[in-house]
Image 1 (cartoon, helix red, strand yellow):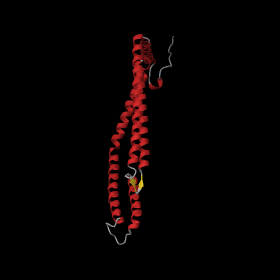
Image 2 (cartoon, rainbow, N blue to C red):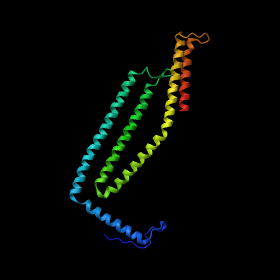
Image 3 (spheres, rainbow, N blue to C red):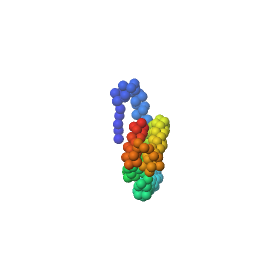
Image 4 (cartoon, rainbow, N blue to C red):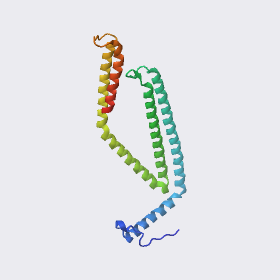
Length: 220
């Protein structure tokens, strides 16, 4: 194969001279020829294929473990929901099934993220084994590191916000417990109030508790 370069091929817009372009083209061509020669070396090819098979096996095992753990977690959540149907109530309404849906969605999201991560790492490793695809491996690695760095920075920036949300929900739960205890006392006549009928205490409690959580969600 023969190729050539002529004046005008250089990137004159960015100030590249034809001499600089010739030198960079020569270096790139020499590197490509070395990579091509290395690619067809039988020992390297056999070693790369062997490591590829091992990587495929490890990737399949990892995906199987992630799927299995996800299934076990979902089963545990369902059993927990059955046993705790009457414990998780908000304003007198059971929220156990909604909590189960939320937990199931989170588990499936985590499963997807982990499986995509396994495939991504697998491809990065496979590409690194062959000289032709090593530049792809480098790009994937750099992108992953940059992504992790940005995610880490976002988490650090969101810590104060998350702490504020946690405090708001803690206070809302505290007020909810106090209000619920107060109205339960009225319902059972342990806290007698002349102007408040025990029959209306339950409905009032549900409305007040609902308003407390609505305000908590709004401020959070």
